[in-house]
Length: 175
Image 1 (cartoon, rainbow, N blue to C red):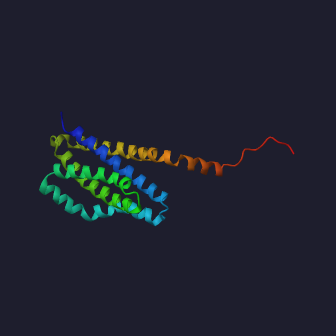
Image 2 (cartoon, rainbow, N blue to C red; image 1 turned 120 degrees about the vertical axis):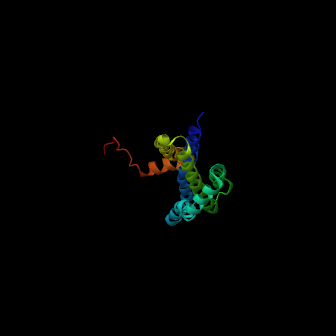
Image 3 (spheres, one colour; image 1 turned 180 degrees about the vertical axis):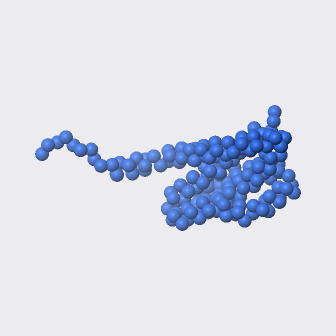
């Protein structure tokens, strides 16, 4: 079996968790009455630390190879997803944003490196097309699953919200 399907599956799973966590972290922050600035800061933390560490992460992958950083970052993405459940506070959301964002950046770099390395140079464009398709699939699935996970907890409040804002049906009474 060729290793490409494994790496595409890993991409789909980790990116699903990454984009899904962005939804659940922001909804959890809103649920905890966080200000709009705080929610924006949480979302920015997904990219701030990776932005600062990207070059060093690339050099680290070049020095050590892709498999150790790939294994570490996959475990860190999973741990980051569990952080808000283990630490249900704003601090847990901040930590999850940093851990998930940084680990996913390292995994993204390693996956791009390994997908470019697999196969002949003639197959490289096809391999990256499969990788892009994996990201597209998970970009759809992640928010969908995050919303489905969040919905049952908020259904009663949502129905109350809609009912309070729906005008009463006109009655058939005559005066």
